[in-house]
Amino acid sequence: MNKCAFVFLLLTIARAGDALLGQAPTKHPYDSDQPIREPTVFGQGVISTGDFESHPAFTPDGKALYFLKDSPAFNFWTICVSQFRDGKWTPPEVAPFSGQYSDADPFISSDGSKFSLSRTGRPSLVKSRKKISTSG
Image (cartoon, rainbow, N blue to C red):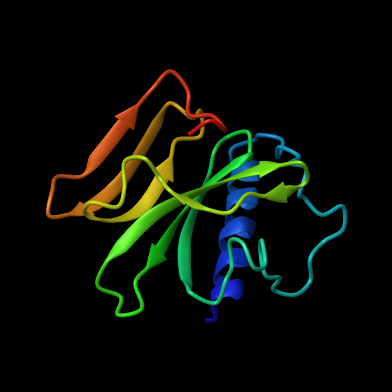
C-alpha cells in the first residue's frame, strides 16, 4: 500500500470510529464536503513530501497534526508537528519532546488529555496535560 493510500485509510478509520462511538464527526476546515472516492495526498508538499511520513495523530480540534518522519535508512524516527493555520498546514517542526531518541507511534486520546509515543533507547513517554491543543 502506498503512503497516500495509507494516510487516507487512517483518516477514514478515524471517521468510522466516531460513528461507532455514537459521536457526530467533527467538521474540520480541511474536510471535504463530498466523499473522497480515491486515495488523496494529504498536505502535499508539506505533510506528504515524498519522504517517509506515517502514523498521523490529530489533536481533537483537528488543528494540529503529529506524525512520524523516518530517516532514509529507516533507522531513526522523529515525531513532527504541523499546525493548520490560514487554510493551510504550516511547515512541520520536530515536536519539542522528540528528536533526541528514536520516537514513533504518536497517539492522542480523543479528549486531548494524553499524548503517548513509543521510544527506542528510553522508556515510552506519556505526556498528560490539561488538554493537548493546537499550541502543541
